[in-house]
Each structure stands twice: as structure tokens, then as C-alpha cells.
Length: 284
Image (cartoon, rainbow, N blue to C red; front, side, top):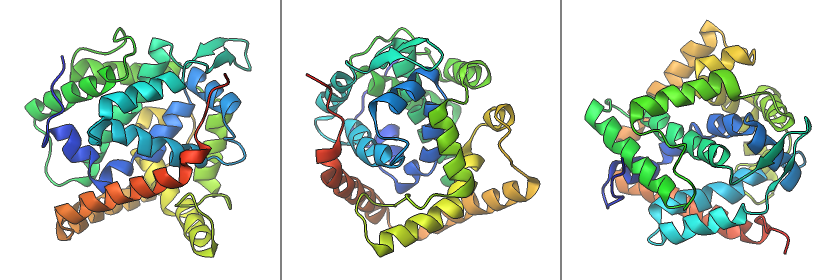
């Protein structure tokens, strides 16, 4: 089931809001826990030297496949960048970025991210009809990449079931995921909020890495993932996370919607412009 990505549709409404990015670290961690994605990131990027550069390079391009007028063309360009990403992981298992199950899981975490942002950080709740409509729009979003639709669940309930199954049975602590978990737990002096340096960016990056990043990353994770990988999460952590989510739900009421959407698009354009020369280019 698909639904058109028209102006004012639910996917554009939620993806065009700053809060759509809040569960992003948790989504990225679950991507790295997928054996194929974890291996591809480890072997085809400088992830271990600059772990957040991948986010700076990727998110503006991916969000543009929803929000930009030429979204379908951008999506196919992203697909084509992945044609040469493949090989063998540290356990001798073959992987390829365009394997349908692997590519779908990356998209599934972004779908999950949109739903999680709506659930935690927006006032009100999605109705059952809204959930089906929003999910159908994410299927249209996925179809823009021109990759096999075989793994795509037919409706939201099936998506939830398949997502839980992957979290419970298929994810693992890849070397890339272990590195990301260590950053979320302990911080990193290499973390920056923006893809440009300077004392202010470095200072802000350390604050985010050492305090709210852990809370928001682990708080957004599905409980099954926290349990499987022994990620520490106490009742006090849950209380703090609940308060943080409430603050976002209430605080954004005072932020004009137009300003919110302008801020997101401006930030994505800024980051995209400063990372264009650093983006992955496959070998000839």
C-alpha cells in the first residue's frame, strides 16, 4: 500500500519538523547493529576516525528525498552510490548495500524514527487511520529509491512485527555499533554538532555527547534492543527521559511552525553544503 507524498501530507509534516531528528541517533545505532550495514560502514567510510561525519553527509541527502521537489531523482542517486558497497564481513559473511533486506532495514529505521518522533515529541497521538496513512507514505518514500519492494511489509501492523523481529533476532553488536555505543555512553572529544570546527562547535559537541546524547539515544531505543545488548537504563533515566520528552512537547508550542520548518531546512542545507565535497564516491 502506498500513498502520494503531496504537500501537507503526514510524512512531510513530521519529517519537516526539527523533532524528526531527535530519535536519529537511536536509528543510526540500529542501522550499525545490522550485520550488512555495520560491515559496509566500517569498510567503506572513515567511521572509526570520524563517526559523526557519516550523519553530517547522509541526513541532508536522505531528508531531501522527502522534502525537495526533485526527491525521486535524489533517491535514485543515493541508490546508485551504494552499487559498489559490498564484500565480506569479519565473520566471512558476504554483504551488499543493495541487498533488499539490508537496504530496507536502513529505510525501516528512518520510518521508525518518524513514528517515534511523532509518538514522543509531538502533542496528541496518531489515530489508527493516521498510522496507516503515514506508513503508506513511507512506503512511497522507499519506492523512490527504485530498489526491490519484496521486503516491505504491507501495512503498519506488519511493519511493527517485522521491525520487532529484526531487533530481537537479527541485530548484533558489530564493531561499528560497539563504537557508537561507547560514544553514547562516554562521549567523545571528536563529536561536533556541525560539520565545521572551532572552539564553540567543539564545546557544544562535548556537552551533547556527554549529557543529552546518552539520554535521548538510549531512551528512544526499543526496550528489546536495550535488553539484548545490556544497555544500562535505570528508573531514574526513564524519569529524566520522560521529562525531556514532555519539555519538547510543551516547548515547541511556543515555536511558530514556520520558524520550526525553516530552521530544519536551513540546518540541512548548511550541513549539506559543507559536506558536499566529503561525500562517498564509489571507485570507478
